[in-house]
Each structure stands twice: as C-alpha cells, then as structure tokens.
Length: 76
Image (cartoon, rainbow, N blue to C red; front, top):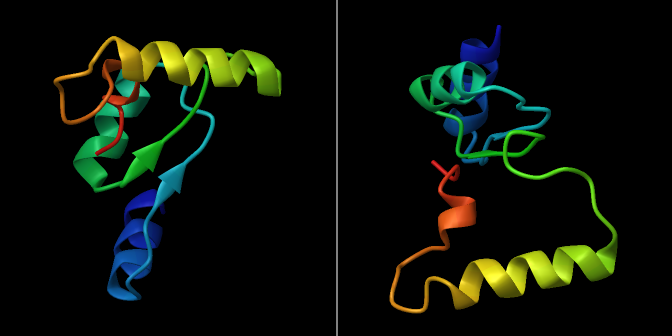
C-alpha cells in the first residue's frame, strides 16, 4: 500500500512525506520505496519551537561546507 501511494503521489507531481519513522529498518524501506522525506523519533523527538530553533541552528552550523545538514540526511 505504501508503494502504491508513493507511486501515485509522484505521478501527480507531489512529494511524499512519511511520518512516524522510528527505526532504521522503516527508514531503509521507505527510502527504497521512493519516499522523498521522512520524519519521526528516529531523527528527533517532539520539541518546543525554541528547542526546534536551536536544533536547526546546531544542524546547519555544524555543516557549514556541506550541501545539507547531517541531521537531515534522512531526506531522500
């Protein structure tokens, strides 16, 4: 079902976001199925706006010469 939904969304020109990813196995499967982005406990726990701001600042400042932050390597 996830594969069918992913293909259908991509055919419509939509990006596919998988929510609730908790394990590396889930992430690996979603990557193989073609999900564009993922989110979930595997990458970060729920946080306040202030904590999110600090999280993003830290992620981007630690990869000043990189194309994308290490914290967001889950983006497919």
